[in-house]
Amino acid sequence: MPPYKIRDDAPPVVQKTYTFALWLVRKVENFPRSYRFTVGDRLTAQALDLLTVLAEAAYSRRKEPLLETASNKLNSIRFLVRMARDLDLLTVESYGFCAQNLEELGRMVGGWRKSAIAAPAHP
Image 1 (cartoon, rainbow, N blue to C red):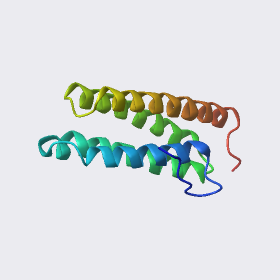
Image 2: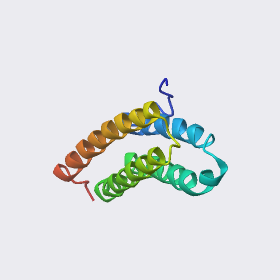
Image 3: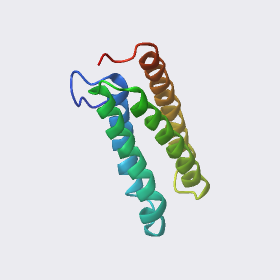
Image 4: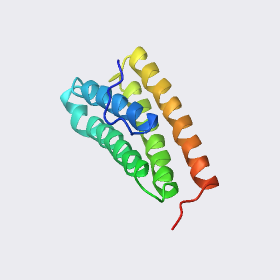
């Protein structure tokens, strides 16, 4: 899936999260109805929350608390994606795509968080 430009000044992690969330929302649309409004809604909500939190962090002076929240959202998404795979809602290929993207996003958020802790915002 090609990356989508959302803002020229948005950090790469926000761009990548946007692309991943867009893919995930489209994927959840194909879940069976019995899971679309339970696992699917929760998965979509967590992905959109992650995007929102990262966008807030991009333009906030106090990034560290927001990046901690983003890290927690990533962990929630990982569990929900695993559940979706175990319920056969995602193919092995889709699960692999998710796992790869979540791993990369985790590294990006972790690096950003580490740099935010090392260089706190000025009051």
